[in-house]
Image (cartoon, rainbow, N blue to C red):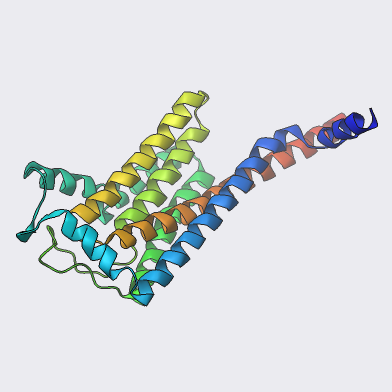
Length: 249
């Protein structure tokens, strides 16, 4: 009996309004940590040169063995993959960010606006710095089905699609009351992030490890933005509770 009463007293001390936000904060910290660790492991292996054989083997497996400039699959698939890859490109990402930013300005949601800009601009800056520092060359020109001139690691398309689409998914999920809609939005974001990364490998402009590193870093950065968002949410709830307590007194 004493044990059960002690459990009740323990749970009674947990503030109800904080519980969901605290769980979100722990979840975002966990995802951010996993993303960072995965990126560091992949980077270490890539820099050591131990992935070169596997990376090239995957790229070659997607091509005609008699002509590496010709990908496997119907010719129309090349156009489809190019269209998909554009969803993670700088032009489209910038366009969707501007559209969302204008909407948030009109709705006077300054906090959400700052978080979206932090996710996009901060993620883009981080990607550029890492590409310059690591300076990995892309697959040979024979494999590339579209011209790319920047460094290869990490994949910017994979990283920015993870950052932008996952951040926007969380933003949209927060204003949805129905659980099924929230789940659907997140699944769509994950699906877009996945197929954009796959398109980069198919088009021969990135090695698989470039894409994996981009996904990992994108998840880590998006999780960092979620962490800030949910900490602010927790702070708001804390302030409201203080006001209520003062009104009661």
